[in-house]
Amino acid sequence: GPDGAALALAEVIVDRHTAMLRSLISADAQLASDARYLLVRDVADDLVARSVSHLIVGRTLSLPKGLQYFQRLLGFRSVNVVVAVVDR
Image 1 (cartoon, helix red, strand yellow):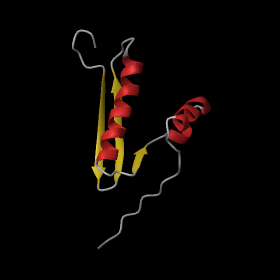
Image 2: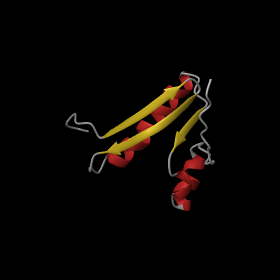
Image 3: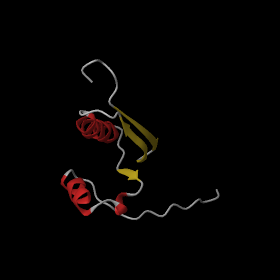
């Protein structure tokens, strides 16, 4: 923020070409919404630079339709993901 305090924090786990956004939190401040938007864009740019092709985010299918529409405008696509553990 203007005083140098952090407005948002993202925690992302990366495994080869897949990443999971574990948390995205922001300060209770007027600039927090803009900070979250810019942070998600920065995270996405960084993941693309690392050749990550999939970003898993929980609960996207339960978001309000307007927010899902906005995410599609930004290039995100909501899908169901099934995770399976394979013994090697």
